[in-house]
Length: 561
Image 1: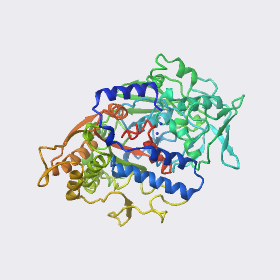
Image 2: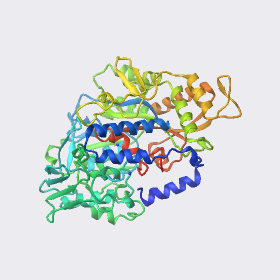
Image 3: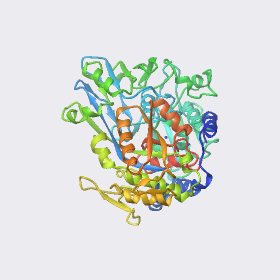
Image 4: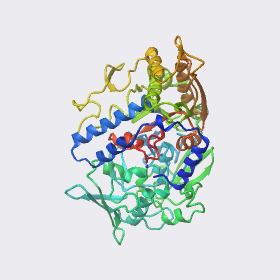
C-alpha cells in the first residue's frame, strides 16, 4: 500500500539526522541515474523501451544491496462459513461493502493493530488503507481481481492522444454529514495530496499529471459534474490509480477546521465521527482495543451494503485473536498463530490469497554500519547478508502460506505493461541468476536462493572485514539492531535471520515494536536494518520501483535522500 515530504516529515528527518549516526557520504550510491530512469519511464510511449528502463532501474536497486528480498508475499485468513462477500484484491486491500453474516448484521474481524491514520492522503500502511477504503472512495473502485470499476464517477472519456481524461461524476453524491460531494472535492483533494506541505508519502502517484506538484492540471467544472485531468504522457494504469487511496476525496471543511490541521494534516481522522463518504463511517474508536464501523446511510450504494456494523479488534497478538475466534467472538482473522497454520490448512475456514508484493529486508544506507566504506564496500557488505539467509527455511517453517522465495524485488507475476510478465517476456534482458523453485518454476532474479557462506565471507572481506577462519575477527566486528513487528510471525523470521547471520559471527539484536511505532521508525530512519513488506498499488513494475526514488516518502532505505 504509496513521494517532497511535508513540514512534519521534514522535521522528523531533521530529528533523525540529529539522533542517528550517519554513514560517510562516500558509502552512499549516486541515485540520480535511478531517478532519471523512473522519470523517463513514466513518459516513455515505446512500451518495449519503457520495460528496458524499468529492468535497468531494478538492476540498479539490487546492485546497492540495500533491498534484500526474502519471499513473494501472500496472505491467509480464517473466515467462518456464515460469512460471505468479503474479498481481497491483488494489492492486499480487504473490502467489506459486499459482506454478509448469516443470522447477524455485524461482522467482527481482526486484521491489524492500531492504525496510524485513516486520512487517504496521509496513510501508508496496509491497515490504514483498508480502513480508508471502507470510509472513503475514489472515482473508480477495485474488484476482487484488482480491476477498476466506476464508483463516484460513472465513467470517463479519454482523448485520442491518451493525455486528457474527463470523468463524469455520479449524481447525488453526499458526504456522511449530508452535504454534497462532487468533482470540486476531488480537485481539492488531489491538489492537497500533491502539495509538499501535506506530506503525503504517496504524492508521487500524481506526478504523471501536468503541473505536479504545485499546479496540478486537475479541473472541476463549475457545477462539479465533471473532472478533467491532463497527463504528461499516456499512462496505461491511470484508471487503476483512481481506486487507490491517495486519489480519494476528502472533505475540505473538516480537513481545514481540525485544530492541528497544519502541523498534523491527518489529525482530523484521529477520532471517531469524522466526515467521510464510503460505505462505512467510524462510530467508536478506543485506541489499541477496538474500532467500530457503521453503515453510512449517505453512501451512494448504501442499499447494497448488507451489514450494519463492522467491529475491528485492534490487536497484533495472534494468539489472542485466535482464541477470540475459537470462542465465537470473531468472524474473520488474518493474524493466525504460526503453530496453528498447518492443521488449519485442512479446514474450509482457512483461505489463502496471493498479493503482488514482496517481503524484504531494508538497510538504512545512512546507518553507522557503513561508516568509512566506499559505495562498493557498503554494497558488498549488504549483499553478503543476502548469501547468508536461508529463504527456503523461512518459507517452509515460518511463512507457511505457500510463499515463494524471492531473489528480486519486483514480484515474478508482475505484468510488463504490454501483455506479458515483467520477469520473463523480455528476451533482450538477462537476469544474472535463474533459480528453480520447488514446483519447477523458474525464478529469474539477482540473488541465488542457496546459502553461500564462503561467498558471503569473500564479500565481507571485500568490504574490509577481517576473519579468523570462518568467523569475524574481533578487530572488525559487526553488531546491529534489527527492527521488526512484535507479531509472532515477524519475530520468528527475525530469529531465523539472527541465526543465519551468526554463522559468520554477526551479532544481531532484535527490536520488536508495534505497528504504529514500526512505521514511524522507518519513516524517520531510526533503524539500521528492518523487516519490510511492500504490496504494489497497481499491476505494473512502477508500483514497486517508484517508491525508491530520492523524493519518495516511502524510500525507507534513504537512497539519494
